[in-house]
Length: 312
Image (cartoon, rainbow, N blue to C red; front, top):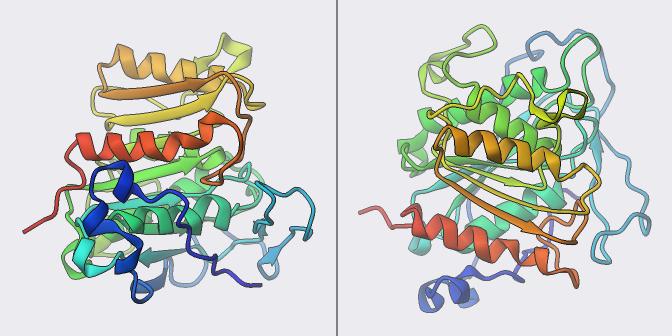
């Protein structure tokens, strides 16, 4: 299975953010630096079952997104982070932990992972691809094992920030679908680890400095008037958040509306974009739907919040 996606150039934030000269495609003389690290030594916390090897369950030519195949990775028992650095001449020092979706059963590893990291790299942000545990672990909440992985991952990034050329005060999280739920849980459950501390990296804060949620799922409970789910204790400590979703999203727009209302009530800095149509699961790929222009909005939001300023 080829885990390396082609460079995603469709959304060049250079033009979008008025940085055309410094971020033009001509600066890409070589691939940015990448390192892959395991999150845990040996078995991950609470894991006892042997799932077998990781497998891409996609069927080539079927269930395409914007006319292209995608990776649907299953049986992840050895979670990792892949740190993807941008070119040094455009590196802003900001970083984003990227959480692909897949219903907590698979990971859309390229559509909502590696392609997102390439986009972040294109305007100077380090992308950290989180390959968290799937499918759901029997007897545990669907997000429990992934949250352990996400807390561990963000703590590792902040612990190694100086070594990796990252500003420890500009580390965000971004998630799609179930990965959006995971990003939201991490944004609200970070004061203490949900697993036994492993090393010094677990003493570093795992709170994201900002959050981006793209067609997030599982945020509210339709059986309880779409109240925000209990694993999302939104408060004034919740990071500034960007949310985008379509009214016709099959995961239900109420997921986002309820969460956005909770953010507003807690006076969390918020930007929310609601489109009439667009569906679900498009990632960064262009379709005729206007919602696929969301990367422009997200890039502008990051810039306006001062997250893309070059560090001295």
